[in-house]
Image 1 (cartoon, one colour):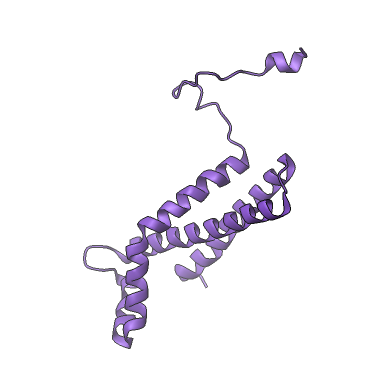
Image 2 (tube, rainbow, N blue to C red):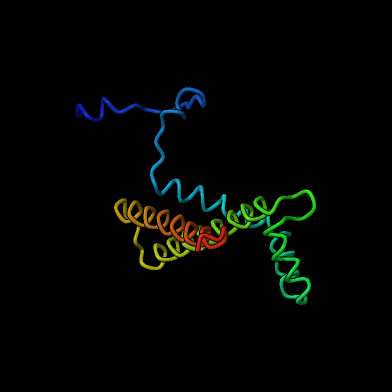
Length: 143
């Protein structure tokens, strides 16, 4: 057995308090977990999505109420919170979509290698966060 194999830690029974704090998840693992989280966020925010769609297309008056909700809020809910929820929804959709395309590409082309997994995971993270930043800047009125 080589020296390198002897030095690597072996995790058989993982102690959540001791071992998980030192474990470094690879980029592909983060993308996988965030893909599940983004799907959950979109599912949980489905009533908000339906409300936004209904209010925005019903009439001109309801559309102006919709725009006012993002600026001044709805009752006790401030407009900034509504914008943050919309931003979370934007991120969830973009990440879920890009990660889904990544998974489809890997399935169709049999591109299952450690190098491609790492590089495509980094591209997924950069694209989803970059596009979210651009759309978030538009949402918060920076341009």
